Length: 380
Image (cartoon, rainbow, N blue to C red; front, side):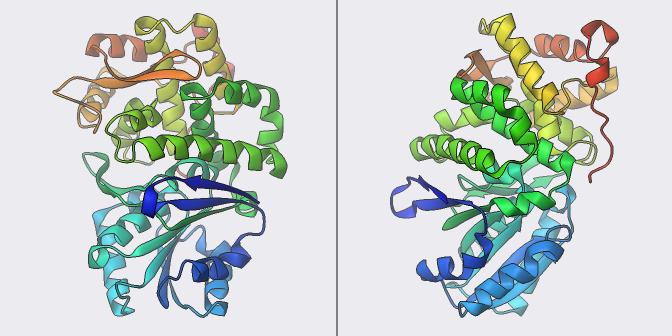
């Protein structure tokens, strides 16, 4: 097992990474001296696989456990679902010393974390991310929240978990499309912070795609180390932490205009990162060679690098981007790369330049990308 610490003073916590960790959940929670009652929040995809096992581990350790199951998918990350969870927590009489376990992917983690942050003005929670994307990104750092019709994550809080357990065994049941979606966040860490990680992914991508446990443990641990370092320096995204949003401004906009159904999160931010790399070449001097390396790695990971938008869709996308939390004084602000491993946040991008870049990402044969086009169907 690998352990990574997130250094936040009295609110510091560990991320445990390894195989077979679910069985020890109850004992781990016992060591944290959490309250006697707890609720496990999961979704209809994950609960059938791991809900019983997690509840048994908690019960065997002396906790009184309730399983709350919410619908699977991004549309569940809503205030309506939050209210339904509140009602069940009240019915089960959870108290201030009680705690919540988030069992699932990024949607469940964001939702359950927000419920924990706000129920009874805050109860403890533990993250058990079961997707690659959640293990390397959304479960770490304490950003929790839900979506509005106007945009993604517009309601939320910074609320740190007490523990994060990344059991690599849970990745075995992950559908291929979901697994590849998580690679978008893994690749992001190489772009924004660690050129050596990026080069390692170029070399070892076949092992990563085969879900080799030893390779995954090292890759996930490195991603968590990077995020822990960044969060430890800037917990509430007043500066450095903004670099974690590379590719997310456009990605979140694509998710919003497609009503959170066409793209998985990683697919949307894959397109967003390729677009951000193009903008970086125009505004920051990112070399064309590194630009192509970025695009190629996303393609090799089976992720989309193109988007075809008509005029109306492009207008909606720009409107959605204007609602993004990273817009300041009405100006589009992006994280852009000088080179692999070095980015700058808060760079202003003129809207016409953004439109120009999006227009070049339509996947026409002239771009030699037709055979790599990633068919995007409904959420799996």
